Image (cartoon, rainbow, N blue to C red; front, side, top):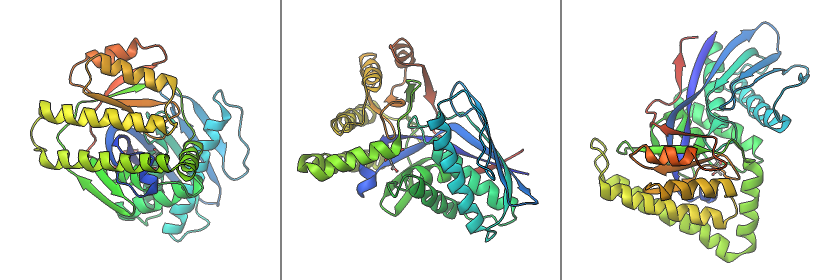
Length: 338
Ligand code: MEV
């Protein structure tokens, strides 16, 4: 029995545009998916998933027959989760050169599904790591990231960047531009997350942006402008001292860039009423800046603040289900005690 865990993430800057080769800066956060894998004698795959939303639910699914019992969550969420699990199993089998390997898999996660915090990437990364280790065929962390990217790419019909999976595998803050993936140093930023209890469909949202970008030159310009924001943000982070508390000036400038980034994502049609409400609520409460994080459509926003006021204001915002401080996770994928 092998257990691996991997962190979720927030995007400081650059989601969606990263799909088209612009840079992005996601940061791993201390919310993790844990996957326990036990090899089986036969070639079946049995998956038990727990706590895949902040409220938690349990799903049991027999991967060998496709039979799935009734569950008290929208089946689209279960379908989405199982799509990622199946693709990760295929990658683990290929990496271990054991195409018929069977597994009992247990997924536990405190990252809400489809809410912009990288739940699918964390599950896929932890699963590939645990499954290959359980077959005595462990692979390097960068190869876990690479295989996890291929799994996401397959599930999202070829519309995925390496950002989510690389960040979850490596931990910390990362910069991704096309195939160029690097970890970067940042000061500990005071990150607050607001969650509306909802989820967005990444594939549909990415397709929507693609359509706009292909239809209107100004939508394509908007995507490039997001890239400009990321480059500016990256420079600010590179000029700051990662060992010191972030300066007021750094937070103010990063916050301004986050606000701009949110406006452009909104123009590309991936925000929502509740995400906008939380963004405005955080700003009104004095946050340096706020933006949606991840694919959008519903789910989470990320704000920069160093006082509890932002969290309190978010909790009182209609449509906000939870607000919490998100600490940067320096650990990416790691083996856990079962
Ligand atoms: C989803 O978490 C982030 C997107 O940029 C898609 C991707 O990078 O694969 C919307």
